[in-house]
Image 1 (cartoon, rainbow, N blue to C red):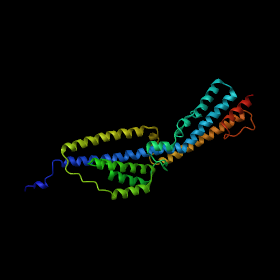
Image 2: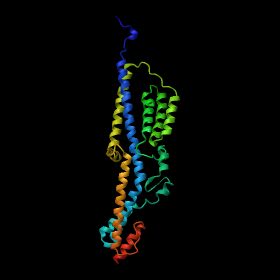
Image 3: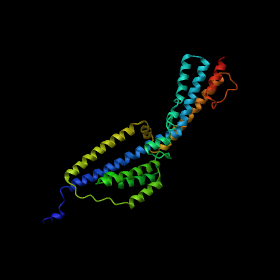
Image 4: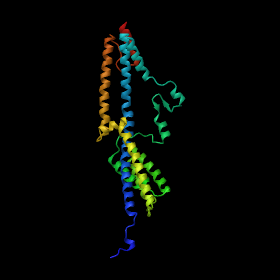
Length: 291
């Protein structure tokens, strides 16, 4: 029997299937890269927020220990080391005045950074968003991804929508992700793609391949970054990794405080303030003991 022309497969069908498969594979890859990027960014912010004070305390104790040791020994090298450690703690002069409250010696204030990057000020609660947030995000990304658009206007609409989806996911905001899901469902349905000439399909495959190479580079840079390397040490529970680092820092702080107390005792000052005293008092006590 002769197959009617209307039932014969078009020459472009095989190529169209390849394009659709490549699009879906790229979207899944991009979801994975974006998920990891959010975790790296959240880990970095929470690391600074939760552990920054501990690092600052360690640096202050190191400076005070060096000052106490230098005051006791009078050694030029000890004095140089003490001055160097103390200088690291001093803020950059007049930075706040120059930038009118936008930044200090530590860098941009969160509100200023948010204005410049159009990111929300509210910090994330966890390194990894909840399973429900991850499910909602993946579902939205698969449905509304800009790479599925066939027209420029539709692509722009999707890009703007996905930007909001990414921001909500970065905050782990399940409620907003649900609202966005409802908004997408109620919005204009994407137009079905008609038959595409072979030349355009080949060009589409080439573009998808270039996009994949770009994502591969981004993924590699994320994995090789300091924070990314730390996250890879605890892929199952990155929030627990923060707790472990905090526990180690607390132990380091306790050891430094004990060392400072021992130096104060060697200085022979019965009324020497404890480790919570002012930075300069340790040095003054050492000088008094030396005298």
